Amino acid sequence: MTSTPLPATDHPAGPPAPAPRASSPLATAHSQLADAVAVLGYDEGQHQMLATPRREIHVAVPLGRDDGSTVLFHGFRVQHNISRGPGKGGLRYAPGVDIDEVRALAMWMTWKCGIVDLPYGGAKGGIAIDPRQYSTAELERVTRRYTSEIMPMIGPDTDVMAPDMGTDEQTMAWVMDTYSVNRGYTIPAVVTGKPLAVGGSRGRGTATSAGIVHVTAAALAEAGVPLTDITVAVQGFGKVGSHAAAIFASRGATVVAVSDQYGGLRNDAGLDMQRLFAHVAATGSVVGFDDADPLSNDELLALDVDVLVPAAVEGVLDEEAASRVRARWVVEGANGPTTTDGDRVLARHGVTVVPDVLANAGGVVVSYFEWVQANQTYWWSEQEIADKLEHRMTSSFADVSALAKREGLSLRDAALVIGVERTAEAHRIRGLYP
Image (cartoon, rainbow, N blue to C red; front, side, top):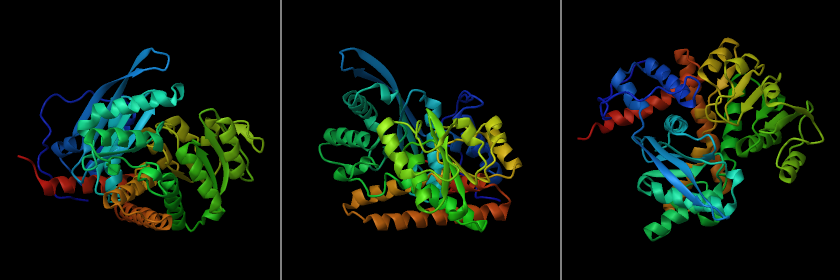
């Protein structure tokens, strides 16, 4: 496969950045990009331009705690590429957040927006904080201080935030309010994933989960398998995994196992989602649900099911874990759940992987719909959004699958080739300034 050459990179010359850890999300992202670049035939200068973030910022985020003490956190925002439009990406609160993780997530967002053909570039943000250890008032102060520190980088036409791990619609409302107060008027389009009362979109809360089910159904349809005939295991019963499990069950699939950070459970006859959601609401975990047998996260990954959905964190399917996978399809709900070595093992074992940059793109698709609605101040019905999401996800899967078959590529490589090529083409057409 060939492509029109890009102009030389406009990133400054200098010593290369330190290499990421071999098992890190950034190493995985760089390896995936290198594979796509090899297929596209780009030279090293073009490769460097695509691999290097356009802008990034590291800020100190001090917090005056409720007890009067002061603690300091580190926050980050990375705009990986903005050739196709404003940066777009979530804000993550987790203790292990660092700049390399944010760089990887921003890069994946660039390709993801290209794959589903949205007029965005990729961005990501994060604060190294465990939100479970802080009060709501403390999290509000952290969010507002972080927003004020990165304000020169964000805006409805420059970089649009959304919820991610450890953040939610309330976090986005604080970001929007902080930004708006400093600008002097209300600007709903600076974030997506907001509450409906302040300009959010119907369907946004479950969009990533619905997108996972749509692409799973499309992948199964190619093999002549209906959703009603499959068994599913979901690793990670958070915002994405829990709703994906519920949607799978509502469409007739048998969800036999789920897990969270505390443990997992299994019922081969199918889990009762309504009762399980009530149990989690009451206890904070799937553990202890009385209508299933306990199992560990590692055991869940190795279950003999049709579809495995890793929907928790990066790197869970490394070489060792991938060697134990018995599912026929792995549909990536999390960002970067499969390492490069894990990918190779799954390919050798004949497992079809529907990659994260396609499978979990439903969230950014409906974020785009929310951004459009906010800019137009005209709101769509939930059915309109559901129909548009399904069309965008299934047509994007069809594009990826067609390229994979035509060029003899995996679905991951095909998806990345599409995302990388669309990004590079935008850069080529725009040219270099000055």
